[in-house]
Length: 398
Ligand SMILES: [Fe+2]
Image 1: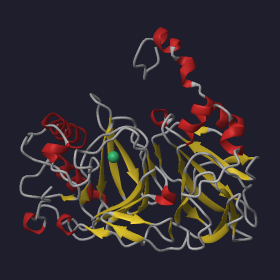
Image 2: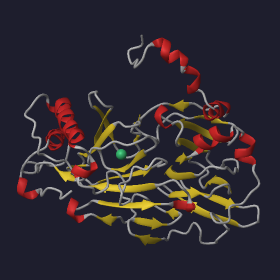
Image 3: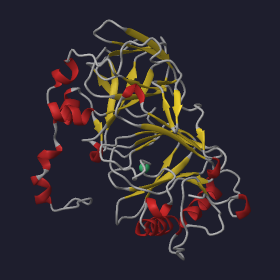
Image 4: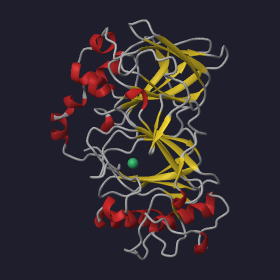
């Protein structure tokens, strides 16, 4: 039996054919690979293959747990070139990883809008709108990462001509508005209502002062679509609350350095180092937690998929400023504490009362295991370590 086997070989064989789907067959027909990973160290360096239909190069990155929810792919536009135009009956959000260029979006009614982008630009393609990407440089390639809800759509219809060749405009989504992709938007609570962000890495966030200087958050719902995304930033020497949820979150580090712990129920935590360009895809119901060991605030973009609600009764998403005792049963909190300590510090005395929190600073008066993990990491690879001076690090109220 294989080392990572969860069930018997016989049982696995009976379900083998279900791992194949219209979506996976379509990716194979495109001549591309699916990297079945939940961690890619650098999207800017990930290996791509020629993508004959679109005219550039690409690869799909799609952990098995999210292969029926949303996906992710990286594409490269050749220097002085463009990708082939296409329209599609699924939604797509794009983050530019490198290069400068432009995108033309148009509909059957004859309306057309073109906008320019550069590194860290963020935008979405309106449902079934024609679109084409152009590289603005004659010497440098351009590269972007996109998240789409193609798996569910392609699996539902199992008809590629229908998904990519249906002549129908959705004017509520896009009606040729000239300022559709202008870098402006209306802020509604934590939501920024916009279709284009020129630089996701410098976009002002809504500060969370109670979590320490340098923290912030902002949410998006672009191109009037159903897919969510958000940017979150957390200060140096802090960590995000440990939590778990369903599949489909694609977390792309925009800046900073640190590491994440991820682990499935009942197994030991695994550590994943990250910097700008790292992709982390927490698999279905794996616990995960991010630690900032760098000298600067760390910022990430998360493309989400939220078919099954992971919000509380007040509509607040899991992991966002919810008291630990409501966010997670004691059993889970205890598990986070024990596992994190065991992996990075070895056996020690558990402090059941120690709550972790989003953006919690290490070194608070009653050090939870996460804080001690971070303390240790900071001492070896982080900024000048202020950890342990408890008066300088008030605990988050969360
Ligand atoms: Fe998460």
